[in-house]
Length: 353
Image 1 (cartoon, rainbow, N blue to C red):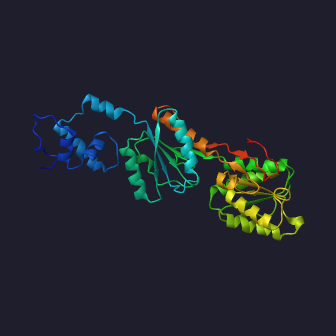
Image 2: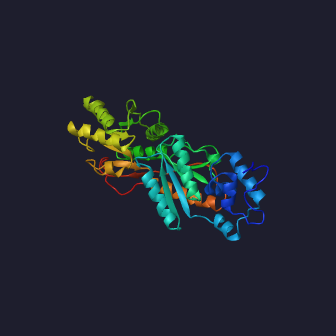
Image 3: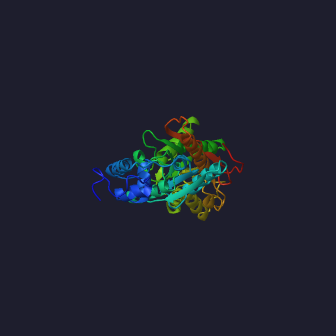
């Protein structure tokens, strides 16, 4: 076989060329040839150009039915996530899948780590499935997943992950959720509201602290003590609770707003083991509404729900609009969180907005 750029001698001119002929003459697989001719898939520009040149020399033209099939939607969306534990992605996927099921669209999930090669293979799997669009879900709102948008030949929406410039993303309103939680405690008469939260490297930590400070400022209350920042864990919450226990009664908080539910549960355990009653002596509120922690805590934990299912639903509906060619404004949208009131704050009640 001679150089494809000069001449093709493998296929008789009189015969109607097929995709198999193009692939053979270009020295690639049928799948690669198809992707190159349909402007899909990831490959070197030289390879794509060579295949297209071979197809032109052979006079290859897909028949009308094949072109129609190529143009049809697969009615499948891809969900790519690095949240392999599933803490955030599972509810996002549930909201996405429920919204898509009503529209006859299925969801294809790929879990990845942060290795670019794994991402590349997952994207190729998505393209092989001919997904119509892609939802990229993360485990924190301030990190971009290693997805190279310019090389992804489909619409993309980000959820609970940093939104690259010119892209579209959805995240929970962390500051608003914290403000609602602390305002609720203020409304219950709490005046010395401490804050125990996660690592400073997370943007969610600064946003939730900002909501805590704003609610106290609006109520003309001082911030109680220093913000205690550490791991997102029960162990850190327990250590923070022990600090409160070691303080004189007059210097203890009467409420603690925690950066997540695990920390809150640790705080409650430390208080309870020292005979401090929750919520009578100290009220405790968490953040996340992670059911396995919130409902198993004693007393059941009041916490901020991040509305992850709604994030998934909104992301899916927006992605469908993009696929349909409707104008969609770029940028990151923050969706409201809701306060789920249980017993740990001293005010059992239904959902509070």
